[in-house]
Image (tube, rainbow, N blue to C red; front, top):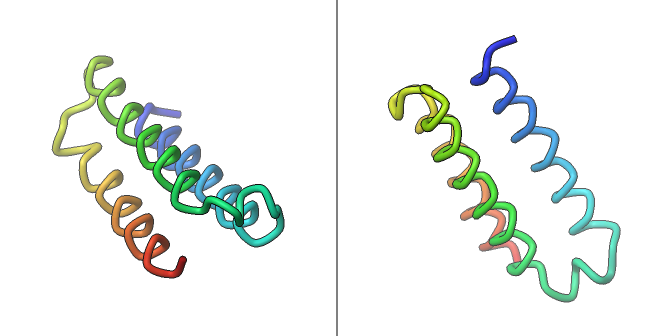
Length: 78
């Protein structure tokens, strides 16, 4: 499996963990923006790291942008 596919799987899994946590855990519900920003920052760091591994910006950027939009929409719900 190539790096881009691994990133896609990781992003989807972690995003779903965030959604579940924001629904189920009071400690996350108390500061939802904090946890959203943390994961958004992690996703950005991963995108930058895979570029260091040789993945082209144009290949990873659309994947990150998709989740960036999801995070922005999620922020609006809290």
